[in-house]
Amino acid sequence: MGSPKLDKVADIIHGDLLKRRHGLRRDDIIEILMDARSLAGDASPWIRGRLLSSGKSSIELLCEDGRTHYVARDIIARIVLVAHTRPAYIDDKDLLAFERNDMKRRSNLHEKVEKESKGSDDSHLWG
Image (cartoon, rainbow, N blue to C red; front, side, top):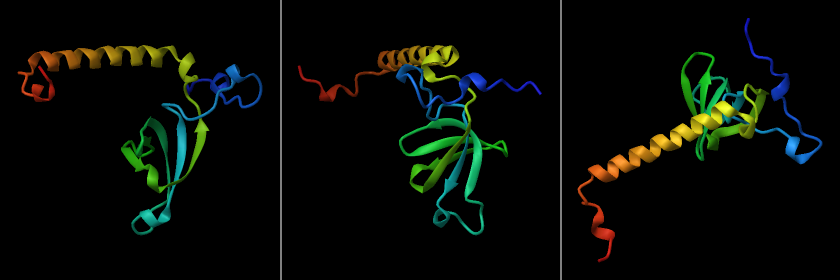
């Protein structure tokens, strides 16, 4: 079916510290058990999908139904890692290249905003 071989990206929990690989990463397949008290009606407390991002207050998940769901960390009871689909962050060349390009894009955007602003926010500066 063309699925990637996941043997090389499996967790390594024991052994040399530098060779250990564990934890959640972008594009991992995960299952989340939500607190049933936070759900309406008889909705299933489990949500499954691919991890898109993980922030301070929520987790973004692309689910089996094709929709993107944002789950508040406050209602998460359990997260189960089903499979890693990418190598560890430091070994992931594609992800590092993306991060570098994203930092350049953000830097250019900030420079553009500073150039286009008329100095109306300079009231906090002295002199």
